[in-house]
Image (cartoon, rainbow, N blue to C red; front, top):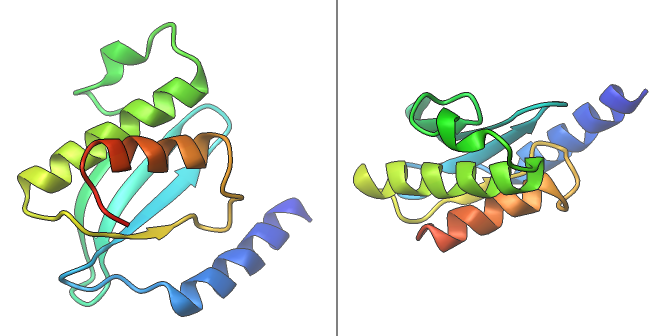
Length: 117
């Protein structure tokens, strides 16, 4: 039930949220233990950047942190990758998850890292 409700919300969101070459989509997925973020150009169907709590570049920093703080670090990391690759504006796709907790923390971390959305 819960997963089906999220899938319905996801489809509803994806009707309006589209990533383009000048404004790609920042998609977030939250699992029980980890959080993942991808920046996707829907027009070219390419993933421009990806980061998660499992990314080797920031994996060592995750030890001993709360999940909320881990999400902020992932947001800052994805922002750093995007800015290096010339992307500074994105469209936020919460992927059917409520905008609070870890999803909001990731968005705040990405904004603090320099992404605009």
